[in-house]
Image 1 (cartoon, helix red, strand yellow):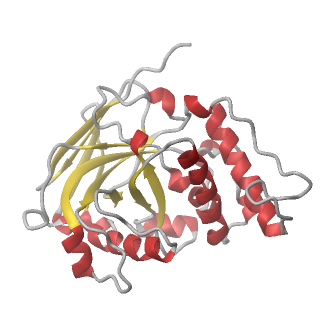
Image 2 (cartoon, rainbow, N blue to C red):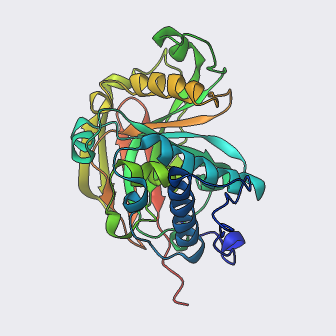
Length: 292
């Protein structure tokens, strides 16, 4: 996703093998984290997809990939961005097998990613967009306890709402493995929330059926069980993981809980509509790209 505010940003340079954040000499692992950060930063700023970062991070060092993600997010926060929540990825067992992992991943949502109130999704902010239908949860309470249980997660949800996540990748041709997508903020792009707001007393996420259409053609189907058996399982995983990383979920945040069916590539000018039984519909029209 390109950002006009950072389009002129130059790639950070390590001075004499020193970390650009701390100024301290870097180990080989730290140099890899620095190199991956710089590559993704430039790709986002220039709007030009880059080569995968697993050539420097490796394919299994997920902790280093999260460090890259955290560095990139700190840069966004320093520019004035505001965190609005989190997204969960890799909730499908099939996708996990494809990437060689046995757990989901997560990324950070920023307020300017929420285009729910826009007449059209700004296609110019995207590089290689794909859409997936999800259940979003908005939290009424923090999830920062020492031993978070399913009942705690359910009690913390203010309401559920239908959502379209518009995933994107700074990595060319979506040629990703787990370290590529984690470093790239879990391939976050934009998101659209529907109008329905239902408490969990009125809606059971695991029982939901989903159909997603592009210009009235059915392109994806699924259900709540496709998301770790229950989207609330995904929220529980995230709550525990976010706390373990020292950044727990907070009241007011939105959580995109993971795809209910296969994601689908989208192009400028199309309209995407997702219907989630018991919850409602969410629709997004993608703007035509500026010819300039």
